[in-house]
Amino acid sequence: MKTILNKILILILFVIGFTACKSDDMNFSDAKVTAVNTLYEPSDDKAINLTPTGSLYFSWEPAAVEDGGSPLYEVLFDKVDGNFSNPIYVATSDQNGYSNGASVTHKILSKVAGYAGAEPGETATVKWTVRSSRGINQAVSPASRELTLTRFVGFAELPDQVFITGSGSEAGDDIANAMQMTRTAQGEYEIYIKLIPGGTYKFVDAKAGTPREFYIENNMIKEGAESTSNTLNGVFRISLDFNTASPASPIEITNVGFWFCPSNKSEWNLAYAGEGIWKGSGPVNFKQESWGRDQRYKFRVTTKDSSGTTIMEDWGPKNMNEDGTPSGAASYYEIKTYITSSLNDPQWNPKWKFASEFDGANVNLTVKMSGEQYTHEVSK
Image 1 (cartoon, rainbow, N blue to C red):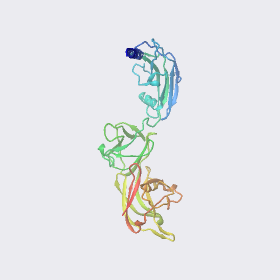
Image 2: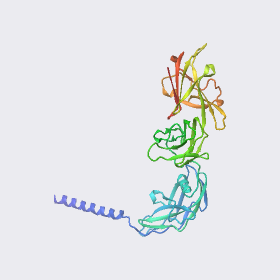
Image 3: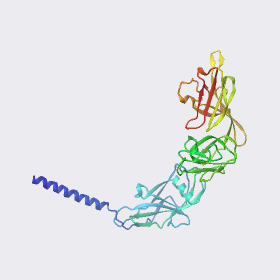
Image 4: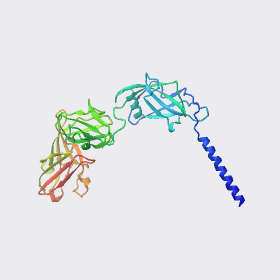
């Protein structure tokens, strides 16, 4: 029994001693640290055309610490006439600050150029150096290099969602009623909405809290609290591309017609009902052919660009070669936009088919150009 107690006592003393050693090892002393003397890359006066997905590697010779430990590093950016006492941006080096190198994304560098006064698409020259530290002790390198940065036109941080609000749109001034734009691709959005002349509108990335705000000026998307003045009157498709910070000129939707393929014309029109929705009703009579009853249809849409030029569009199924009858799947009714003049056979393609029950009936058509997926409904 005594032997067992002695072994336990020895084990306890060993654990206490090991813990004390670890505690001493983990004590991060405020040892003196030297400044970095030599910067390796990028080279002085290097010019970079920034891109949304690029990065630039910075490296320098290691600093020394009095106790032999490892220093931490930060890359300091400043305006050309600055002295790094109040840098415009500070980037931690790789490996949580322990590496004598740092991979800095072009998105960050675009921000740096912005802090130096460059607008998107413009160029700014900044300078950079390295600060080494250990505890409270710091040392800024006496060496520095200049870097010329040309910002990409688009936004470094793309919004995950976009809404439109303002008195110049049917959404009104209450941000809680802002209408959500449809995301068509990464960083690209569009919306079908009624615009009201004499008012203003803007774009936000949230309907509550403190959202990011955007507006259009000189055919560019800019971030800020300003609004876009509206002189347009009617229903328009507004498209935004945050990758290039460019808005497309609003396209007016002047007419949406129910196009019956066998008759090769629009039989009747749908009226705008608000929030990107058109509704209409009228008779549908399939055409008798030798092979059966023809029930093919789509929507023929008249649009007008900013110059007043009329451009015809077809709103049809996402599958250009769709030739089936409704199966009950919601995806059958999904809509894609086509330029009519680009179609090989605009009378017939693209097209859907009515279910047999709508032959000879008064049919209600609802086109929904809003939400995550454009679609339409057919009912009696």
